[in-house]
Length: 334
Image 1 (cartoon, one colour):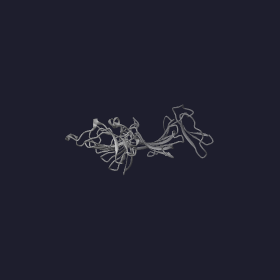
Image 2 (cartoon, rainbow, N blue to C red):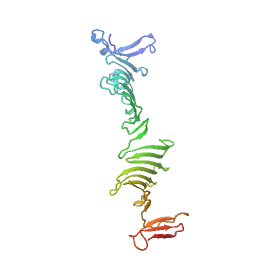
Image 3 (spheres, rainbow, N blue to C red):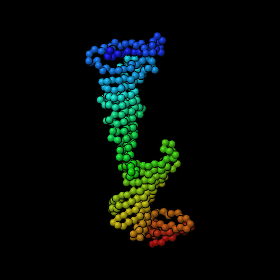
Image 4 (cartoon, rainbow, N blue to C red):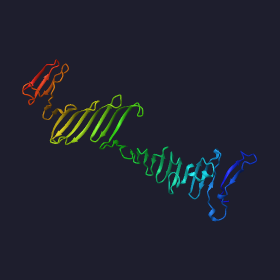
């Protein structure tokens, strides 16, 4: 006989009339092949299924594929005829199982549509989660991916699929572009349950350091940036330091270089523009006027401001005033 297809009915543990090496089986005549003719040589060797849950797994050796397959949960020949859904592992030719539709030799184990692992020469080692998503990939080129977010290259570089960051012997590099902000964040006590304490990130031409209040949302931040041609009528290359309060209102300190003449500019969110410009090279200071009188300075200080109300000539003539802690005001000009 070249092939026998049968169901085990009884073993010696179930029938005392059977010796330890005897079983009772029911032969399936449709699939029992006599040993005549060369075409019968090399038929599969099958350990057949059983309705007993303790004997419902089989190891299937197919010399034509060739492969060795493990099935589990088979109760009858109907299950066997639809055995693809019962596969638990396969070694050899993976064609027809685990998503393979051509002859590919390797190893696969697990749920063909869920959590599984495959290993073969073309795609390397791949691991999938319970939803069938690829989460870990070790390519044949020597590159490793974790959830398509972390890539470990053969040259020692750690990055992700889009190269949005790299970590190598030169340090940590974060990619930035229009509308993109890559940050390094700090949490207390941990990322999943802790409060966000602060971040460092780059966005376009800005480098930003942020600290957060207890709610983890309201932030104060320091922005360092570099610009070119800031003023249309007065082109300049300049660096800017911007301080943001908890209301996200910016207060700026700009270091400007124009035609070899440098200046330091201070501006606030509610000033409508620059408030103070200092020219260290020329050794002079510009102060923008204000329309209302400020409060008194603290003890030991004098408060100086420019006002458009000189008390005589109207708004066309600016006046320099000084205020003492006691509230006394002195106009220095005109």
